[in-house]
Image (cartoon, rainbow, N blue to C red; front, top):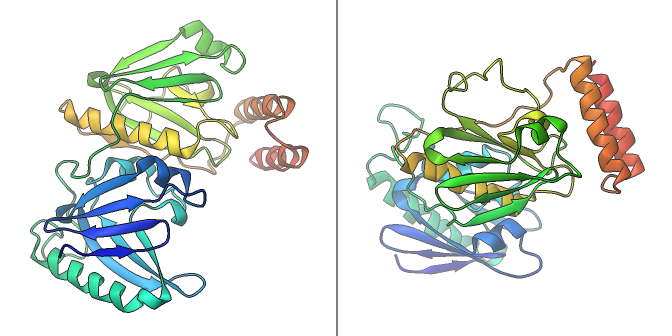
Length: 302
């Protein structure tokens, strides 16, 4: 195709075998998109394309990635807000006809692209390898209880004395080679229990946690907790994606595990979360209203 369709914060350039997505650096552009800057999405990485009405008279062109094709979306596991979805192009209503044209063109390409869908089913066929390039290392970010860094082959956690639990201090700073890992669990910093946890080989089955491993990220030496205001999405998610891609590059089948919310906790676990919340409150990172609301949510789990 070779054409360009400009939207709000984002521009798509249609190439012979891919779509080059460029994100603006403006103040209104979500930080995650600014950090990504641009991404080349091969047609083989897509399963479908939709066009739907947006807000305030806009239309949204949405390319849907295949499972396992993009480490960023694997790591996000459905937790991204719509405004941060790198596969959405919001177009002013005046360009709706153009958007319809390109949507039809992309659908035609995907129909001809082998592997985009499993014949005989409505489900897209998972990609055998990552088709979209992961963010490049080195990468680092500061969480509430430590600093995480990744040099392309090894993940390192260095604990902060002001935030790390006694369990983590006893374990000491941690370093993990990607060959030791089987996946990553990323829970968005925009929720209370946000964290990044490394899943190690031998820590139980791929679809079940190790019963001997700490359930709370606060006490797990293979995890950093975000806390409100720490480990923002635009730093921690590309980090998680890069680690996932390196795990697959090391010959492992990566396991991105979305941490689930709302599970019932025992009294000890709730007390520990309230303690952590109190620390954030005393540090001025949580307002009085937020502290009261979150404490009430935790107590309601008992």
